[in-house]
Length: 296
Image 1 (tube, rainbow, N blue to C red):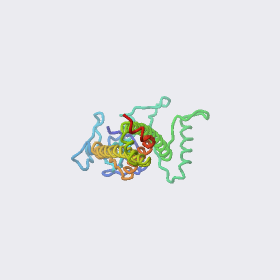
Image 2: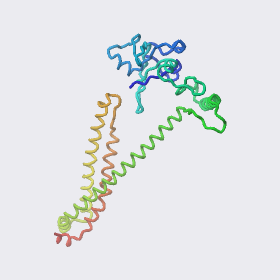
Image 3: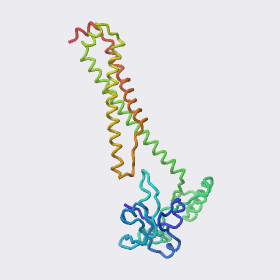
Image 4: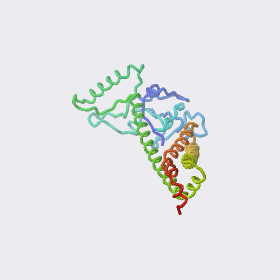
């Protein structure tokens, strides 16, 4: 669903976003309450798939016609959405037609946000302080009361996204650790059962000259091979699922599996087999050959 923003001519320069065709909103559109619209690439292609330049065409919003005066250039997207899936109309038109939100005290139309661009990065803190003081004064907020608005900078947004990413990383790491622990315990149990079932085989090998080290290497090798096969199958399944992300998202998201990731996954699988296979291998190596040969 395309998001329709009511805005002013300063939005495009503040976002460093230029029109691909036509022009962006002008002051005259705001003052005259002109029914014009600027489309992002996504709605332009969705509404006019066979038209390269839809300038002058008509788009209806709630049954009201709007004339297309511009199409924005490709802004790209992220995990939080498609920035191209936007459309822009004059702020005054949006306040009267789409978003009838007014201040209960003054009756003036409200806005959901104001976007500013600092001339230089070092001016950011001073601008934030000036904005905060101005808004507190206009909102008649007393000294001891909290703000009824929020001022966010790009640095704070990056910090917030970094914190979210860190939490997700810890959460996924915990899930992975639990999975490895459960899988390792399963491998250890399988190998212990294998040692019990092959007790006579172990006794026979020791009787013909096999040393404890030979028995340990045998069972450790088997444990590592089992986990390597599981890791290879899991990696192949992951790569297959990653290759499906592109077609399912219609090319908007591309998942790439690097060779370092494959090596890490297979290496961790082998390490799990080696670690959890130590105890079964040690038990097999410690068996008394005479007792093992008499085992039924």
